[in-house]
Image (cartoon, rainbow, N blue to C red; front, top):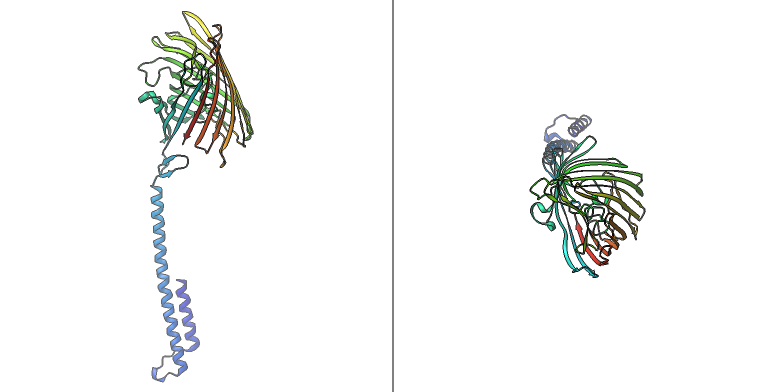
Length: 437
C-alpha cells in the first residue's frame, strides 16, 4: 500500500508543477504534449505498482497458510532416527521404539592336555532388542536366538518406571550383584566373564524374574532386587532370592575414575527345584569345566554370597577386580564355602579411555576414533571350594581387542586353565567377530 501512496503523491506533485488544465489535443504545444505523455506514463507506473503490491499481499497470505500447514503436518508426523540403529518417536513424544541387536561369532581351538576337547565355532550371541517408552513407562524385550527358541532365549524382558528418585523394574533381568555380571556383553573386557559371576559362582542363574529398584547419581548407585529362581521357560516356582549392590566413585572427572562397590545375594530353593551349583569353565567356552559346589533343589537348601569390587580408569589404563565369598548350605549336610576372585586390566595402545557409566556403576567401551582402537588385555581368575581339598581351578588370559568403529569389534583370547583337582592344564585360542547396533 505504501508504494501506491508514493506513486499517487508523485503524480499529483508533477501535475501541480506542470499544470493540469485540460487542453484539446489540437491546441497542445509540443511541450504540453510531452507533459501529457509523462503524466500518462506516471499513471501507468502507479497502476503497475498497485498491481504488484496486490500480488505480493496475496503471495504472503499463501506463504503463511503453507507454513501453518507444514507446522500442523510436522506436529502430527512421527520422527525417525537412524543414528546407531532405528528409532521411531511419536509426534506427541509419548511413544518411542528402537530396534537393535548384537551378533557375536566365535571360533575356538585347544591345546589339549587331559580333557577331551574339540575345536569348534558358534554364534555365542545372536540377539534382537526392542526397547522404548510408552505413556511414561520404559520397556525392553530382548531374545537371544543363539540360546534357543521361545522362552529359552529370553534375556531382558521387562517394564520400568521412574519413581522415588530412581527406577523400578518388573520382569526378567539381572539381579543387582557382581560388577562384571552387570557389564554388557558388548563391553566386557574378555570373551567370557570371570568366575565371580554367572559364568561360575551363579552358574545358569544370570537372568531372573522379579522386581528391582535402582537409584544412581554422579558418584553412587544403590540397587535391590527380589526374584524367583525359576528360569524363563520353567513350569514352576523354583524358590526365591534377593540381591543388592551399592557403589561409590570418589574420583570421577571424565579423564580419571576410581570405583568401589559391594554386593550381597541370597537364594533359597524350593522342594523339587533344580540344583544350585557353581561350575567353572576354566579353559574357555566349550572347553573343560569343573563343578565347584552344589546344593540340591530341596526346601531349605540355599546359597548366600557377598562380594567387594574395585575398578579404575586412568587415561589409557584400566583395572578391575572382585572378591566373592559364597556359602552353599543344606540342612542335612555340611556347608560348602566357596571363594572366587579375579584381577583384570587393559592398556589402550593408541589413546583410548574407558568411560564410566555412573547410573549403573560399570565401565563401557572406549569411544573409537577414525583410525580404530587397539586394546591389550589380561586377567587372572580363581575359584575354590575351601571345604574340599584340591577343589580349585584357575586361569590366566591374554588378549587383544581391535575396535574398528563403534559397532564392530574383533577379539582374541589365549586362555591357560589349571584344574587343581585333576591336574588338567588345557589351553584355548579363541577369536570373536562382534557387531552390535
